[in-house]
Image 1 (cartoon, rainbow over the protein chains, first blue to last red):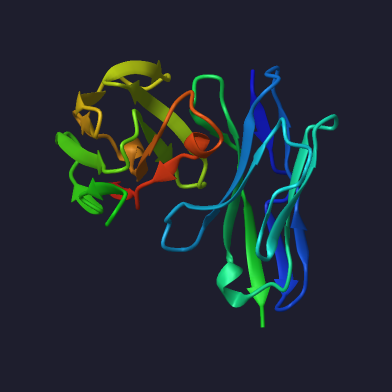
Image 2: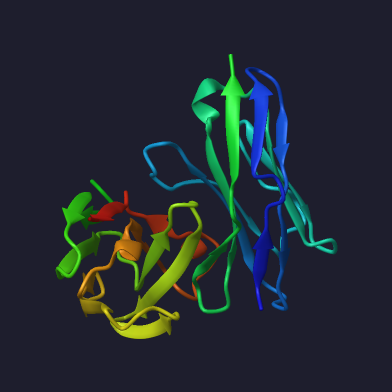
Length: 113
Length: 116
């Protein structure tokens, strides 16, 4: 079975600081995709960043970057220079063998002024 | 230019009623999904269609019936609504089996269903 685990239900960070959200996963696939989605209070699901498992280089998107450790099956998200607008639920997800996303339970991030 | 659109966005209805949520995508994707997000914000796949063919059918009560008239549309019909059906339902779409770009799944804005 494919699973995704986010062990931090809630986190907080001061504005302009850096925060790292943890995610571990399990899959028997050799080629797969990992994602981080952001869900603000509006409930819209917004893609933050994605990583192809066959790429060793960690993905980056502006202030967002990942630390992808394939052997450890770890996929953490780092947010640099945190902004108030980063306050949201963050979901780690694995693209399943049937094409669907398997989500972790989410981490609620609060950015404090 | 909405990529994945769902209607209605908000729906309040009484127990026992039948309701439908419609979804359309204009991204040229071949696969569409329905996800349910419960009160604890846990997101779980319900159904998936690829080229109008059902490929994922999770353990969902048979009161829920998806219908895909074509690749761009996937509707969700719910019979005899129960209190526990209250949730946010997300439609999504993607290309299946394509390269890296095609493996991103795009979501609609969600349909908030409240059963009273």
